[in-house]
Length: 470
Ligand SMILES: *Cc1c(COP(=O)(O)O)cnc(C)c1O
Image 1 (tube, rainbow, N blue to C red):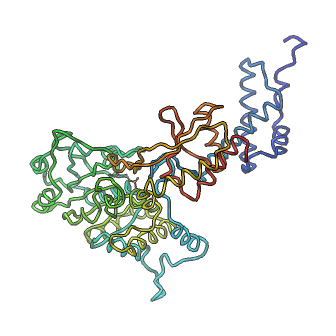
Image 2 (spheres, protein in one colour; image 1 turned 60 degrees about the vertical axis):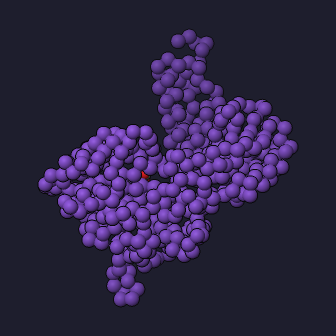
Image 3 (tube, rainbow, N blue to C red; image 1 turned 120 degrees about the vertical axis):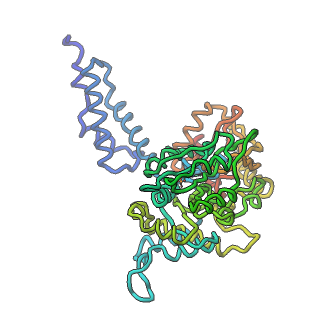
């Protein structure tokens, strides 16, 4: 190496010096110090590795610190915190599915902060049934003999399979039209295998007859399973037996019939919004199935959970499975679900429960969304960098539910004049209260159906801040 060019190794910043310089920055994200230290160390080490491999353009100290500061920001942004959902997808799995109502969250504050009676019988002073009150509420709401709750609907399905399809009778008969992938690594055949059950596929993708099920029944059959097509639909040359027919077949062979309903509607969806009717757990049980399972944070509008409802002897058996203990819910989830179900039970027929999801689904374009859009546009009227209007859009239920449901909605329709759409979208995601919208027809759109009215002001402030007016 010539004596005129400095040795690049000597330009690599020392960890403590870089860390000190970072900590002097006023705008540094409040990331815990050990995480900042690790980021600095990693950056120094990777720079050293690159120099070893021949890199010579070692950045100036300030540029290096700037790079690490960006990594600090990015890691800080990845913590779970509130986001404004302008996507128009009401149950957005990337955004936490169903938001909880303030009343539910208030109950969590007390139960989380203090002791509670989760496993205490206040009458006797002895040990009590965990979540007993919630189970009673669920059974009443669903019109089931008995009900219980577990980590999520996937866990509910595994528990039902473990209990009903094991040992000599581990075969589960299911239609090829229902071997679905729900999303996020949940494939019905894989879940069944993981539970130890043996899958017996019958019929064809588009057509399965009752005889297909009947012909597959042997002394090894443990149960008949029906999986609701919650995230897709089939049209055309299709056939499947009705639930009632399956129930009759099950009865004739003394086999339980189980339905994984998934979506978890507890109200008539068609009365909420101009969307189709989604089967409810009550309806499925009325058709005679032995057990049904639904998700807690989809159309039910509660926390992540899986609800199993139906025959009391089967629910009791499931609760005795060793696996049940591993998949049980904690006090916060049980409390959130309890308050959500109590909200349903307190709702008069014809009314809708006071839950954010119900309010979102039923908001009217002209009565609710348009006045809000106009107020936001008035707030932003001085922003010359934006062209902003409204556009009628289609919002979705989301969360893998009701793919056919198109909810008429209203979006802000934005064209930035001084930056690209991806740049605007990124800047909005980088705000303290990030905003997620979507790009369509060469415009940035924010569907107001999924934006909480209480967040409208923040939404405007995000734009004002990005263009230096706030
Ligand atoms: C969503 C869904 C599941 C999974 O529910 P999680 O609560 O997310 O585990 C299972 N089955 C069906 C039919 C679903 O729609």
